[in-house]
Length: 121
Image 1 (tube, one colour):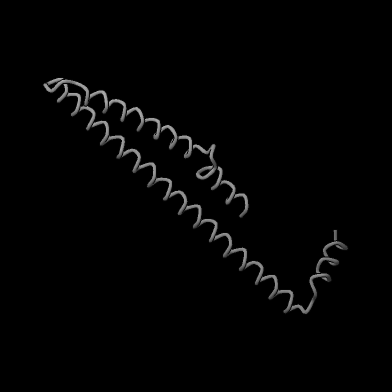
Image 2: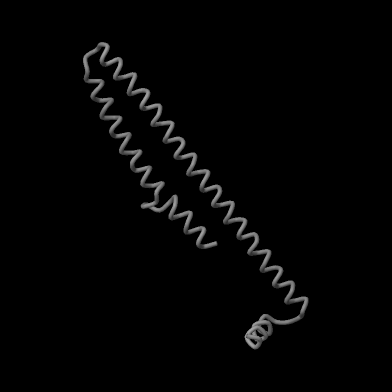
């Protein structure tokens, strides 16, 4: 369970995870888009400015769509990790309860079980 929790952190949440590195690149992309926007705004009115504006708007739409996809995939991955972790915890509890039930049914202490295992090695 701890290894899965660590994997979740390493994959999505750690500062050096692939997700966080991709997010940093996305932020750098936004800075570049803003620079392009400033440049286009400085152009004189006309066809060139209009075409550049249209092209930049298409780029912004694609960028925002990609950013939304990135966030959606992160949230989906977190949800799936959480499902696995919760399922593992549930099974762990079931196994602990089963062990306790067996031990109590046999009226043997845990220490007796351990001694028996050690003696039979």
